[in-house]
View 1 (tube, rainbow, N blue to C red):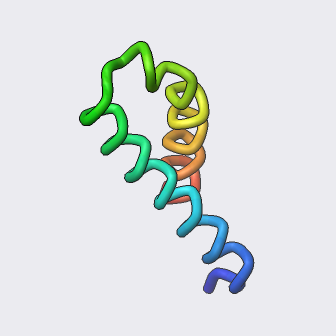
View 2: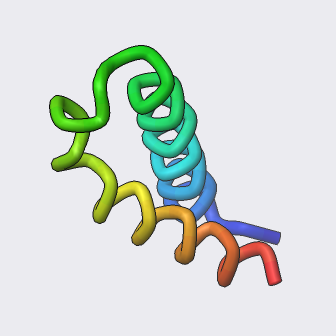
Length: 51
């Protein structure tokens, strides 16, 4: 079972991924270009945590 700190960290990363995906859909790519690297890092981290 995950510790409370670990669960909060996963929820924060998941929230960032969801909000970033929405931002990428709604705004032009040039304006949202700076969030793409962090989005990819969190996606990889969530994938590794899940597997």
